Length: 307
Length: 307
Image (tube, rainbow over all chains, first blue to last red; front, side):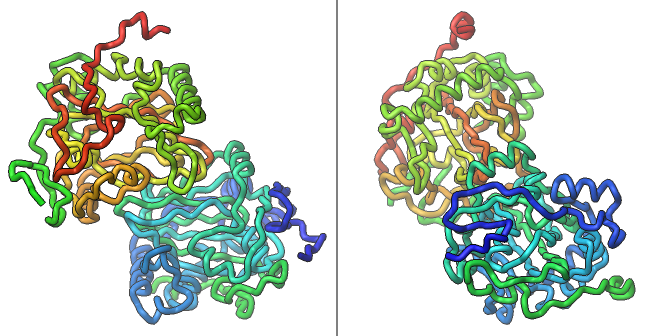
């Protein structure tokens, strides 16, 4: 195995687990690139690695988006695509990738100023969509997502150079404490947890269903959680969570009758486009990690928003 | 298959799922048999099917109990017994049954007036322990318990005649929204959900690890949850949840670093001792369902409590 010694964020090598301090800022350019969040909100994001904006979209907007997702989930033209990921041991669609290209309304969402300017402000640059997906955690049998840092995967499997990306999760159903809401570890964005275990080729086919590589060790997780606690994000449909690409997060299963759906957009800085993956891994498909089609996002006009 | 037509709570037959109204009271004898809960608390229990008494035991008491459970969990003399149940696919002990007979301190807990008089008051009679167990839901990998009514199992597999039993769960670690706390459906005690699927013999060996029979159907659960909502029980170590034998409950997995431990006692009325199991099933072992050794519980003297 060839390891570039200049990589500050080595992971999944034959080394043991390690905690590595973050090098990059969390908020770039002191949040001056765009105007969206207040100084207090930026400070919260900087400290915690995430921020929740309640009711950023109204109930009608959230409903309209949910309807799009539901239609797509039962549309064979979508569900037979590679972009549609099923629950382990079931035919139910768990995630659909690249929704911002498969669906016009969600394309508009990606360019909605309420999301886009937050991303531009925090990342201090123009941005593009590294990945988008809709997640449906069905009632009764929604499976857990174990703890992970997205950046760990994106760095190793996609060759994302630096921590200059963020995710936003738009809640499309009410998230309560019973339906497996997102859990985040405040402050975890400041530490990179290097994981044990080498990655097999084409890992993504399984890892999207059940993660086996890039899994942080128990001691590191314990340390992060003892330091920062765990924050559970509950809120009404239309609320949005923005979180740093390195913030440790996960969610438990959902045995409640209430499905939990969200649309998830990853904004990456135009100055942080992908290198080749680490360790000679084959690149993952473009619908999981945009490499070929990089398009700088322009905000939607106000006129388009009102439709 | 022979079905007694006089059984009001038929379940696991070749019939389809059904919702059957409860016949028995929730609080017996109008709560006059003993003095423990206030009239308001009794009314809450009657309406919801459970009540949470916060800090019923102090931190030292909870700690002392937790230490007993921990010692037992690593004591080969205990863990090699049938009473010790392991996590699916793991050697970690998930539950230990009959803890009130295996451990002197927990024997005292079963007779503690703070628990015993609540049980006597609600059940309107003298009581005995139908089942006791310690549950350890470990950090990171604690598995979920899907929704179930205990009475459904006890009625079918143990021949418990009537809904005249209650459980109390003594929290031995803090239960927060992240570590897979108990979830209950308020009001569900008033409906018996008859389940589909016939029970194989010796089902208990698997069902304690993963429930496959006596699983309520999605439509009934949806109806119960839409009517009553779902209540998540969070609280400090030493808090106690009392809940009716027919209250629908479950819990999600625990990916937090914080283990969740409790001691669980089932008090049954001395007037509700077991009949033979239904459908010619073999009786479950006495450590799961007391049949041979029925001992009416006397409250501990105040002197014994202070040790």
